[in-house]
Image (cartoon, rainbow, N blue to C red; front, side, top):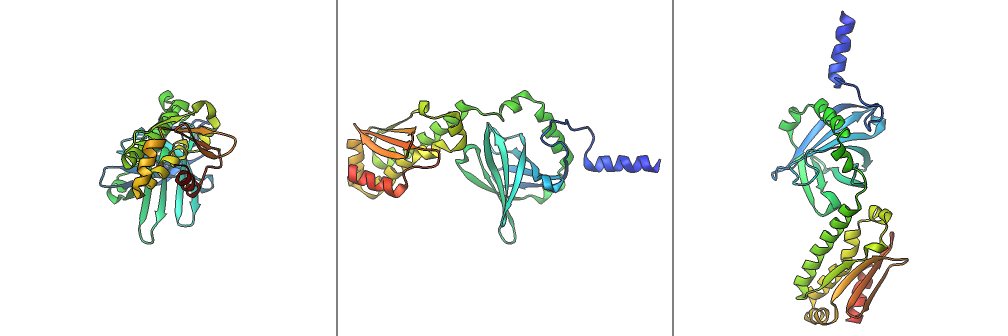
Amino acid sequence: MRVLLAVGVVALSLGCSRGVRPDSAVAGTKPVTGKVYSNEAGEQVTLIGLEPGDAHKALVMFDGTKSELDGQVLVASVGEERRKTEYWTQWRGHKQRFVSVEDRGGYEDLIFSNVNHTGYTHLQPDTAKTGALKVEKVFERYQDLEGDKKYQAMLVFDRKFWMSQAETQLGEALAETNKACGSKLTSTVAWDSVTDKQINDISYGSYCARPLETLQKLCERSDEARRAVQQKIQTVECRMDAQAALKLEARKVIWAVTEGDQVQPDKATSYFTDSL
C-alpha cells in the first residue's frame, strides 16, 4: 500500500496523468518549473523548463500578444550566451527566436519579438501569475496541440505567408520613404528569382527595404535629394541574384541581394549620391 501511494504521489508531481506519444517533440521529458512574464499592455509569455536538462528544451506559451501566436504552445530549443537565454522555435517553417531573457543585473527582462521580427516588447516576471501556474496543464496543452491539424499546418513552411510578410515590411518602408521624399515611388519583388530555401533562410523583407531606407535618410538631409528622387526614380525592384548589386535604369532602382550579401548602406548612399 505504501509503495503504491508513493508511486501515485510521484506521478502526480511530475504531471504524468497520461502518456506522451513516442513521436512527440517532448517525448522523454517532463515539466519541472515555470515562470510567467507580463507587461502593462497585457502581453503574457509563459516559459516551462523541461527535464532532463541536457535536452535543452522548454515550452513557450503566448497570450495577449495580438498575434497569431496567442493561445499557442511551442516547444523550444534553449541556448545560453553570457547573460542571455534564447528560445528558438519552429513556426511556419522558419526557425524563430520569439523570446529571449536577459539578466540585467538585478532583474530579468524578457524580450518578445513578433513573427518576422518587426517589433520588440519587454515583459517582466509576474509573481502572482507564476504562483498560480500549473506546469502540467501547459504540458498537456502542448500535447493536445500536437494532435491538432490546424496547429501542425502552422509549423510547416508557408511560402505565401512569408511572401506576404515581406511585402508588408517592404510596404511600410516604402510609405516612410515616400513621406520623407515627397514622392510616389512603387516597389516590386521579383519573386520568381527567390527560391523557397532563400525565403526560409533570410529575412527577405528587411533585405529588400534597405535601398528605401537609404533614400529616406538622404531625403531627410537634403532638399536636393528630395527633388532628385521625385524626378529620377519611379520604382524599386528587389530580386535575388548571383551577386549583390545596385543600379538605376530607366527610373527603376534594381536592388539585387544574395543569401549572404547585400550592398552595404555606405556604398548605397554613395551610389545614390553620385547617380541622382
